[in-house]
Amino acid sequence: MHLKTLTMKGFKSFASATTLRLEPGITCVVGPNGSGKSNVVDAISWVLGEQGAKALRGGKMEDVIFAGTSGRAPLGRAEVTLTIDNSDGALPIDYSEVSVTRRMFRDGAGEYEINGSRARLLDVQELLSDSGIGREMHVIVGQGQLDGVLQSKPEDRRAYIEEAAGVLKHRKRKEKALRKLDAMQANLTRLTDLTAELR
Ligand code: ATP
Image (tube, rainbow, N blue to C red; front, side, top):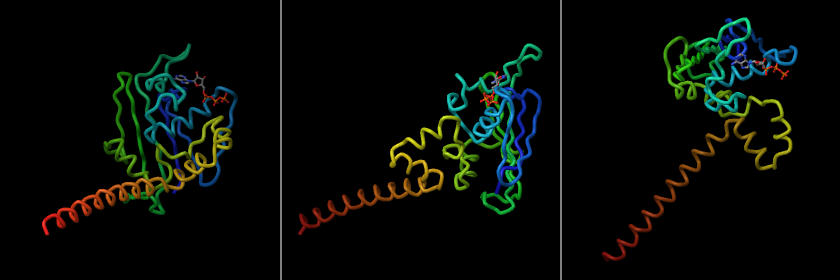
């Protein structure tokens, strides 16, 4: 599985439809300061369902929509499509190529599509939850964040690694199962008391 293409239209500085083709392996985006390199990374976070404006370096969510320049009027909507190569079947969907689209309008309304069909954010999250590229995974490391990771306490660093490795989901399931066991144990104790009283 690898990211194949990223198309941005009306997203931040990318007013016209712009498609980046990504090959397996390492991709470097180079360009002068302020040319939109970080906006490319923001586009990947956003299409995967990022809900926080701050994480996208904006004040409010609508800030992702092209705000206009001296030579070009603002646009009314932002749209990003990420195409993922799924020929190894890593994503639980019967397609060798999966495209996820997110659209947002100035009135705040938004929508998602998976392979051209309307979907909910939950569908996108579920589709990607085991792939390591979901929204809450720390696989997108922004400028300055690396220092934060390196300087964090060992237990916090462990949490980052667990999230990226997909261990967190299993830890949460384990905690839930333990809570159920506790409740069951309390019921058993109560039952034993009642049985003793009835004897
Ligand atoms: P650096 O190398 O300095 O980190 P960069 O290449 O990562 O820069 P970005 O931060 O991705 O650059 O892009 C910043 C540019 O994007 C700025 O010129 C800013 O005006 C523009 N920009 C951000 N949001 C919008 C928007 N909604 N509409 C139009 N332009 C935008």
